[in-house]
Amino acid sequence: MKVGVDSLSITIIPVKINKNVEKNDNVASLILESVNTDSLQIKDDDIIVIAQKIISKSEGRICYLDNIVPSKEALGISAIHEKDPRLIELILRESIDIVKVTNKNLIVETKHGFICANAGIDQSNVSVDSDAVLLLPEDPDESARKIKNYIHHELKKNVSVIISDTFGRPFRKGQTNVAIGVAGICPIKSYIGMTDTFGKVLKVTEIAIVDELASSAELVMGKTLEVPAAIIRGYGHQPLDLGDAGVSIKSIFREKSQDLFRS
Image 1: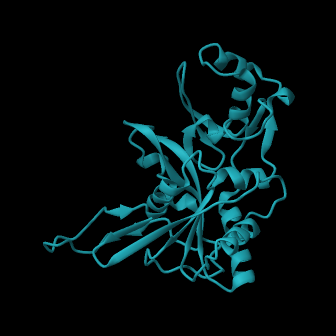
Image 2 (image 1 turned 180 degrees about the vertical axis):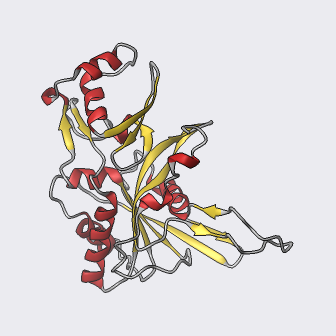
C-alpha cells in the first residue's frame, strides 16, 4: 500500500506470521523470519507497527476465567453491567480507576494510564478455550524497546517500533488503532512556535504521530487477515538512538488537570 502527499511518499507493507504466537516466542525473530521469506529487507528508518495481541501472547498474558473468583465489587458491577463477573474482576485488577459504567460499557483507566473499555482485555482470537482472555502487556514501551534492540543486534538497522491496539473514541462510532508502546520515535510532533501559511504563530498544534502511524498500519493488518505487523517506510522521521529509555507512550497522556471531561 502506498500513500503519497506532495513530495512525501509512504509505503505500508503487511507482515504475515504463519503461526499462532505462544508464550516465550520471540516476536522480533518471527518478524525477521517472515520478512526474509517474503524477500523483503528491513531498512534503516523503517517503522514497525506490531499488534498488541501477539506481544501479549508471547509474554504469557493469557488468563483463564475458570481460575478467577470475582470480588464483591465485581459482583456489584455485574448487577448493572452485562459482563461475566469474572471478567469484570480481571478488569478491576488491571485498572486504577473506573471512569464510566453502563449496562454495556465499562470504561477504566488502566495501570498503564490508558483510558479504554475493559482495561484492553481481549476475548477474540485468543485461544480455542472459550474461557481464555488476553491482558495488555505489562510494559508496552519495554516490549517495543526489546524488539527494536533485537533488530538492531541482528541486522544493524535502526528502526522504530510501535505496539498498537484498537480503542474506541468519544463522540464517534467505530474503533481505530492507537499506539500503546513506542521505541525509537517521539510520540508527538509539535508545531508550537512555528508559523502557518499566512505567518500566524501556532500555539497549541501538536500531532499524535504514533497514533496516526498505528492507525494507518491497521489498513493492511486488519482483524481477520492474520497480519499482526506492518512496516511503514518513507515517513521521514528521525529515529532515535538505542539509548532512548526516556521515550514513552506516557508522554502522550493528557494530565487529569487538563482533562475537560474528568476535571
